[in-house]
Structure formats: structure tokens, C-alpha cells
Amino acid sequence: MSNSKKKLILIASVVVITIACIIYWIYTRNLVTTDDAQVDSHIYYLSPKVGGLIKYVYVDNFFHVKKGELLVKIDPVDYENQLKSLMHQYNATLDTINSLKQESLSIQKSSTGQIGSLEENIKASLAQLESYKVNLHKARLDLKRYENLYNQKVVSANELEIENQKYHAALSAYEAQQRNIQSLQSQISGLSSYTYQVAKIKEQIKSYENQLKSLKNQINIAQNNLKHTNIIAPVDGIVTQKNIEVGQYVQPGQTLLMVVPLKPAWINANFKETQIHRIKIGDKATVTIDAYPGVEFKGYVKDIDAGTGDRFSLLPPQNASGNYIKIVQRVPVRIELYPYDYKKYPLRVGLNCEVTVHVKH
Image (cartoon, rainbow, N blue to C red; front, side, top):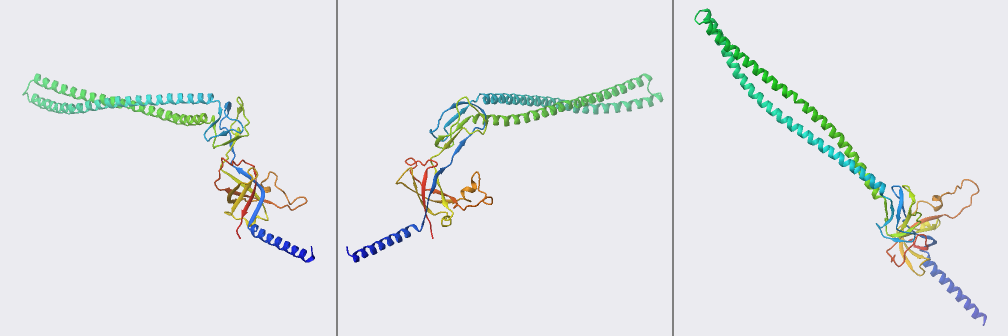
């Protein structure tokens, strides 16, 4: 091969490589890529709100469960007995209140009837007293008139004595009626003891009603405690990290197991700090997952974290102490996926991904 042909081939190769580089640059200049990315999802830690012995465990690790499905049963006997006892106290207190109300009503009816009858008698006796008063006044005038006539020797001593007897009879009748009225009024005053009894009963009723409110609150708590002996699945998902067995005693707040949903899931992509300035919320993204080669998932940038990953680690770096070595930091970026066939491609937490963000200039 002549030198001229070799030169032409070399020039052609350089041109092709240059064009390929230009095309690659044009294609990739709007792309930001990282392979430091993983599938993430909500993880539900299931803990009891009440303590007790585990009576049943219906699931094991790797079980697929539905939302609302019963997973674990704590022995409810103690909580059932507590609820029964409180209900018994509640009903007994309610019966006592009803009995006191009936007693109060009976006393009020009785006293009202007696007072009404006495008031009618007093009214009639007062009217009769007026009649006696008139008779007494007439008898007094007649006696005085007969005394004058006797002094004038117009009537006899016998006639004067008759008038004197009439006067004293009228006086006796008048005074007797007064005593009768006073007796009736005393009886009405005596009925004030009924009012005192009713007041005392009302105080008792109020005290029992306060007890009833307290028991009602305790019953609500007991009902909730009984309900919380059932540990149910909060979402559709897979059981993992189960660490309980039948017969084990558990405390409130103790983690029994976890449920991880396969939907929805998102991607946590950790971009270099030198890339992050190019990424904006809303940018489109393409995701490939190692577990599903050849499958592309579409999504967009949902949010960018407030700091680099190491700042939120258990032992954040203290660059002010010791020798400092600059390391390129990573900033977590959340990629929200568009709807996908999660039954065909279940995204399990922690799967490795490669994320490409289509940035805008």
C-alpha cells in the first residue's frame, strides 16, 4: 500500500472518530448519569401498642400479605376480662343512677301532692276563720249590748249569761281555727325535709354520673387495648425481619416484623456534587435496574436532598480535626417513577440502578 493511501486512511479514520466524538458529545452533553443508585420504598415497622403473650403468628418472612390482613394475635384474655369488669361496673353504676332518679321523682311527687292538699286545706280554713271572726265580732257586740241592758235592769242575769256563753263559744271556735291553720302551716314547713332529701339525692346522682364518665373513658381505652391485640398489615407487601414466635412475651413499641410494599417505589440516586448544579426538580430521568436488564423505567426528579449523604450518617465527618483529604461528595436525588407494571417488575428495596437525568441548559 502506497504512502498516499495510508495517509488517506489515517485522515479518514481521524475524521470518523472526530465525527463520532462530536455526535457522542451532542448526545451526552444534556445527560447526567450515576450508577450509585438504589430502589427505595416505605418500610412499615409493626409494633404492638399493648403488651402480652403472642398467641398466634399467621405469617413468616417472604409472605405476601394484603392490607388489613391479620398477621399476629396477642393473647386477649386479660384485656377481655378487664373490659368485662369495667362494663359490669358501668352497668351497676347506671342502675344506681336510675334508681336514685326514681326515688327523687317519687319524693317530689309525694311532697308536691301533700303540699297541694295542705294549701287547699289552709285556704278553706282561712275562709272559715273569716266566718268565725265575723261571728266572734257579733257575739262581742251582743254581749256588750246585753251588759248595758243588764245594768239598766232591762234584761235578767240569766239572759246576760246566755250571751256571755255565746261569746266564749265564738271565741273558742275562732281560736281553734287559728290553731288548726297554724298546724297546717307547720306541716307544710315540715315538708321542707323532702326538699333536703331531694337535694342530697341529686348530689349522689352527680357523683355517680362523674364515675360513669370516668368508667366510659376507661371502657374506651379497654376496647382500644383489646383491638390492638390484633396486629394487621397496613399495606399490601412482603413480610420481612420477623423476629417473634408463639409464646413470646412482647412489650409495647417492640418491633415484631416489617412489611415492605412493592408499590409504590422510587429511586434514590446519589449524584456527585460536581453534577448536582445541572439537575433541576422536574427533569426527566431514565432508569435501568440490574435485576431487569434491557428494561427501561421512566421517571422524573422529584426532589433533591438538603445535604450530602455523609452528613446524615451515624458518624458524620469532622474535617476540622486531623488531616483533611478532599473527597467528592454525593447528594441524594429522589427519582419518582411513572406508572409501570409492578407485578411483572416488582422493585425490591436496595436493587442497584443506573440513573440518567436529561438536564436542560
